[in-house]
Amino acid sequence: MARFGVRPDTRALLVLAAVLAAIPLVVRSGYLLGILNFVGLNAIAAMGLTLLMGYAGQVSLGQAAFFGLGAYTSGILTATYAVNPWAAMAAAALLTGIVAFAIGTPIFRLSGLLLAMSTLGFGIIVYYVQVNWAALTGGPSGLTAIPPLSLGGFRIDNDRRFFYLVWGCALLLLALALNLADSRIGRALRAIHGGELAARMAGVDATRLKLQIFVVSAAITALAGSLYAHYLTFINPSPFGFGYSIELLVMVVLGGVTSLWGAFLGAGTLTILTEALRAIMPRLTGRTQAEYEIILFGLLLIGFMMFLPKGLAGLARGE
Amino acid sequence: MASPPLLEVRGLAKGFGGVMAVNDVDFAVRDGQIKAMIGPNGAGKTTIFNLITGVFPPSRGSVAFRGRPIVGLGPHAIAALGIGRTFQAVHLFGEMTVLENVMLGRHARSRSGLLASALRTASMRREEREIREASLTILDAVGLRDKAGQVAASLPYGEQRLTEIARALALEPAMLLLDEPAAGLNREEKARLGDLIRRLRGRGITLLLVDHHMDLVMGISDEVLVLNYGEKIAEGPPGEIQRHQGVITAYLGDED
Image (cartoon, rainbow over all chains, first blue to last red; front, side):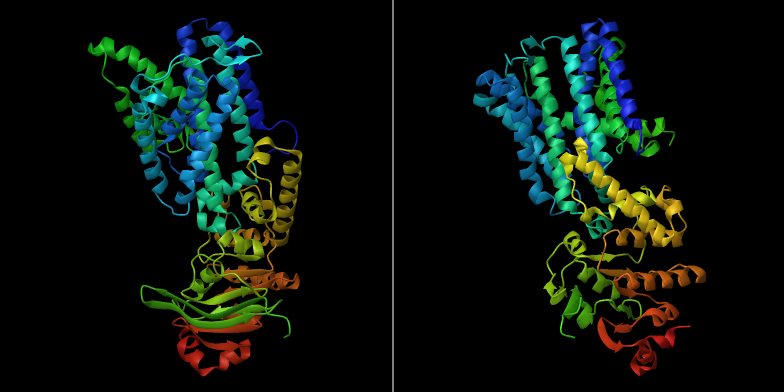
């Protein structure tokens, strides 16, 4: 909010950028960089949900579907139709935004839990389309040979190169989202969250603004999905199910719903915890297939809702 | 009386599940007037405010602002036409600062959209400065400039009420609807509120207010409208209303 000089968020962004830029120089392990790349992807998707939940006060239980739509749009356009990957990525965000607009237009005229319920249903539909429309999506086995992104002949085809891409995108989107939060639109969103009636009376077209943010949230999540597809170069429906929508929700709650930085904290914490659990639990229990992270998600969700409603970001601010 | 009144309400009615909260009410507010609406609890005063500001549609009747029908417009569109409002129970955005609350009030008078805000374009930054300066000027006018940076919920009640009025003023309203602005205020604050209302009228703002404090209402209003069980039972200058037998029976008789 400072009027002169560098704003505090800008300073924090620059520090984070410097730290991130140095990581691949120090961390040589492809496995660790891979995990950090997933943190980046999750951070982008979680930030999309934070804009919706923390700023417009709306809950979506179908973010995985937007992520999946982004991944499949990119995958189908590039692997099947040989479209340029960057163009495919733009198409993925645009198409997903249009889909969100179509869902949101009737929903935001009404209120309450309708968005949560309809996005839940939408997520299930998208998942089954991905599994069953094999001619387009490759069915349960998915799509392969998705080309990586490249910059002027420089192919972003390993963990180290992708690290710079995904974190560059994440920081850029964070900077834009922080700008948005500290603006006329951001104030209006927080006002809707604080009391929709009073916001409307003050001249805020709450219906339109919620729809806009829902579309932005979906498009950001689709961008993350598109990056994911070009990073792994193969996709199948299983990561884009209801479980991932919940995972994103837990990240947002964990980090602090009303903080964009919280989305990064939540994504980092949950992604690394899940990975650690997957590495440790089989050694403790001898079972390799059990999904203990579901229990972890549940406990974290309950614990944070009850004891740390402002999440890790609130804790960091000393609240 | 050639030009139409600023606000004209005709045959306004609203039923909630068979109970008529407002029944066939007509009245007009002329430009520059201070008009008060009084009546016992449940008389339909707040319902009329909600009907004027588009919170819900009337069952019957019309509302015209500057001769233009406004029934069917959304609350934000009605606000943008220049009708500001405060609430019976303070509706501030508690976690936002006093200044941010007032800045929000300029939403309808500014235009930077989502993209311009995300990119912090030059025109967005210029507009943001204008919003801030106009809001600080308004806080000066209501005497809250030194509280600008405080979180709204941390203010004492009387100052929260003032902040809400400041937010409504940021809209640059032609007309301001105040719903029990004196509720919960002490004697001194009430006197200051009366001064503020007169000052607002001096700046060309037309006021329609609902209040139970007869000293305030009778002291500042040009006209008083009395409601009972959703119907208008009297309308006229304060002196006349105080002598009106029906009003005394319905309402004033119970007061103090």
